[in-house]
Image 1 (tube, rainbow, N blue to C red):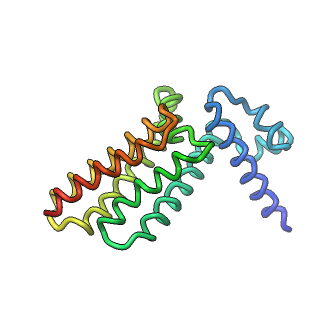
Image 2: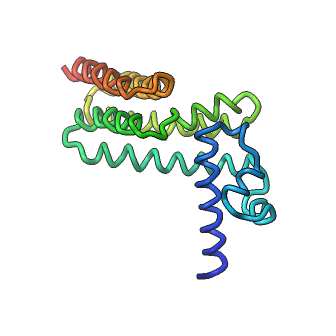
Amino acid sequence: MSASAIEADTKAHIVDVADDLFYSRGIQSVGMDEIRTSAGVSLKKLYAAFPGKDHLVAAVLAGRHDVWERGIEQAVDAAGSPRDKLLAMYDFLESWFGDATFRGCGFINAFGELGATSPAVAEIARAHKESFQRYVAALTASAVSDPTTADELAAQLALLAEGAQTTAAIAGDTAPARHARRAAATLIDAATR
């Protein structure tokens, strides 16, 4: 294995360890020394891979973004009709909310912790949410022929998904996904009449 492959594997391992720690306990409560210890790397290797904690937070959020996109796209791609594809988003959420490690949206959590003091984290969180909004808008455009109605529906459906994530994290329950799905079905049916 080449040195660059080992370096990439080490960086990926550090990101995985940091993601687990940040997501379960919060970014501010986890120091670089604890990440180093948990990852089993030297401090020199940790700082060679990530010169500062902000670099590591950005890498963790980039990884979360990729996992989110893959998960939601797989659920949506497995559905048949445009309506079913829109509703599959909420099925994906219900599955995610049922995971024992679910602690809410990592982007909302990071923004809540650091958004006021870290413009970089605020921008990463905004970019992630905007990406999701564009994704929902593209799905909605396939289900609704009127562009104005499709845009409004997309905003509503994304808001339902965001609210379900926050409510599920606080309640520790999967029910918000089912409630959001039923509300989404009502909105979709009204928009496609």
